[in-house]
Image (cartoon, rainbow, N blue to C red; front, side, top):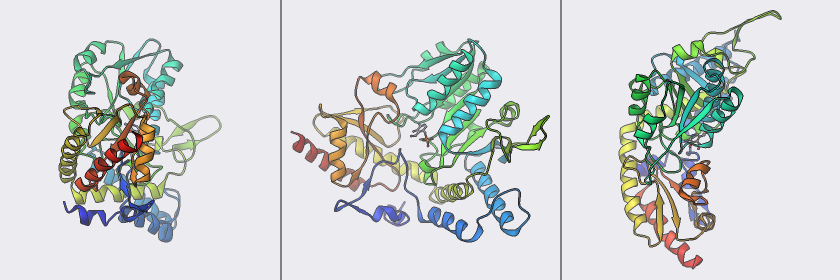
Length: 404
Ligand code: PLP
């Protein structure tokens, strides 16, 4: 991959911040957008803007075609078997809430059990807690080891006849761990338990094939995969989506409405109440096509090199501790520098033009397990370079001197 050339696709990367070249290491929070995505959204509003599905006029047809084309692009991107299995939602958070609410309404009853892991983002904890409270069900937690790897045997012990669903993060946003989801799905299915995969941090790093994984649900966010904010994807196997009740009521999701009885639309519209984020879906689809052009395998390879290089470089800094050292990892570095508060380190690095994140990264339980207030997190993606990592390491040393 010609990274120098690829960086030209991202106008924001040319910015200077406080007199320094921007180094953007906050990709797990949100990724930057290539020009093709920005242009697709802008062109849509300049030339097409109309509501979808219900108009008879030219522009409405055009908007509908582009919107449904975006669904097909997404279907192919994750290799779903049908476009009807692709539901447009606001993001990962809404996708998980939809499943917890709707699947939960139909299939969860008192004293049933739901399994998640100890490294979930709050978005994959709280919706299940709300459901458990509503249905008097029980939430069970798979622990992880010191490296941040899920303990498979513990997972096996948690699975029982009462388990109704497992909801698991594919890649941890605070530790970088890539979980062995295929192994977990296969084992869960041997006990007839469905599995939801939170792909918020995986789909942008390596190829996802939902048929090969055989997951029952898969969710991800547009803005973390080089697309716009406000759009995300819920993939669900047709057999589940057919059985689940609607999540929200309104236009689009109905077949007919009378004051006596309302019947619901077919998939995927049953789960898409109201006017959807049309420009968001179009922008997301452009982002996915862009990734296809770069090639997910090339992206993974470059990011693997950044991970190796960055790990070695960071480990050379005296007093640094990296959290998340799993064998299978993406290019995320979560660390603490001596006893300095992560916030102080982050603020000083920002003054030097380095954008990264400090705090709990919406995984407070992970920080509690390590007994730390939070970490400094540098999360890299394919447009990052080894030179940027050198600059980070150089400036962590500078920050150390300043704090000393
Ligand atoms: N799950 C994981 C693993 C995440 O990293 C995030 C966001 O950081 C989310 C869920 C929530 O994503 P969103 O805020 O886009 O809904």
